[in-house]
Image (cartoon, rainbow, N blue to C red; front, top):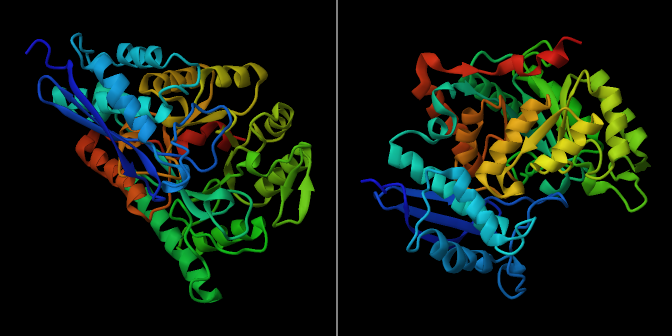
Length: 439
């Protein structure tokens, strides 16, 4: 069938994400019969420079978070344009995504909504992979897509993701000593369970559960979270060290507690820090605990704070820009020109199309930045980012904790991919951090 990959129909619907909030699901069918389905996630702590997620704003329905406008954008605008008399070819991803951007016509996808556009973009990729009879990671990455990512696993949560009193967002176990992805996942599970055993000593239900499935305990201060993670790692039988089995990562999410005057107020520490003081605090922790990765250690527009943080820790620690870069090539180029950070969190819904996501990963590599593929706090059963991590050979993935099915869907998909690759499977492991571990 010469036009088997041309789009026959597109249909969107409103479904629910892991927080019970509405989100967009898109079905895209090709003339050859292949079907692609994608569900778009949503963040709680969103950067100001992200592509715009279209919500209804009707307070009488889902507290204003409905996505019927985005669904209508797919069904009434995008579908007729891409599946009409002159249908788009879903296998030409870059051209299709360019059409989607043209239909929207704004710089931040605010007319049709990044949630509507991304749903179509990802569904097209899945349909094309199905039409070709190959896995998504192979469709996107070719025969060289054999690298399984090192998981950065959320164990303890705070900030917008939990109600335990911590201002910073994530404390993560990074199983750098694992020989395979499967072993890395088991190590993370062991640490998570050990934290649970320690927390049960504080009383029933004392630890809570956060948005991404990690524990949300009412700890007195942030350093207690670091100590708890360190102790639990040892309890699980592993060495918590930069040259050991498990290293530590922190998602500071500093934008969330930056005030209008530029200070950073940590309620848990009962103190407001300047950007320099916050960076010094992070550097102190990194000298005390085996912290190998820090995300958003300064606010999204605090370029001076980022510059100082990079000067202090940039050669010894992975410094990830999330709110800083928002998966945006222009933002990343600005940061690279200033020598700020050394890694970027990659979230497809921050930029709005698959092609732009892949372009950002390519640019990161060109400028010497480490890409980290990431989920959102409002997740779904969609597993695209697992395939994306393998397709791009990113080497790292940040999904959340090892509880809750929206997280496990991705972790389990990576297990399937590892098994499918067999002897060709490679694992990123400790090598991802070679430039920092050499210090």
